[in-house]
Image 1 (cartoon, rainbow, N blue to C red):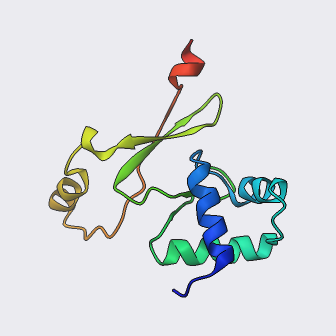
Image 2 (image 1 turned 120 degrees about the vertical axis):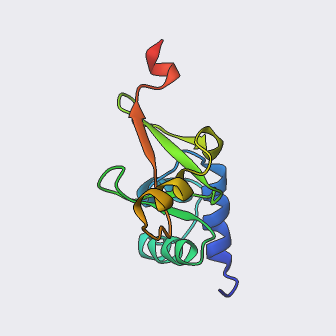
Length: 124
């Protein structure tokens, strides 16, 4: 993938907003910083970054896709109350994908494991 100043701005904004933002959220942040990046350009670049493995596109959390700059193996926790998305280390269940492959005989090329519940802050 060729270098793009816009892509660099988008990636840096994503890294600065580790809340697993949607494109719409990122667009609002970019607009506040006086960026001239259009929503269409943002979507195109987010998709290219995800297709090239630089970021992770997370579908199925809600109607809009979310984006994660953390591409290391990890799981997600979504608070049912505040809707925040948290990372959970894959170390809590090591070899989960390998065990699933062994048990099922499936070839697993990727996984998105999501836990739902109430976060610590909302439990207070």
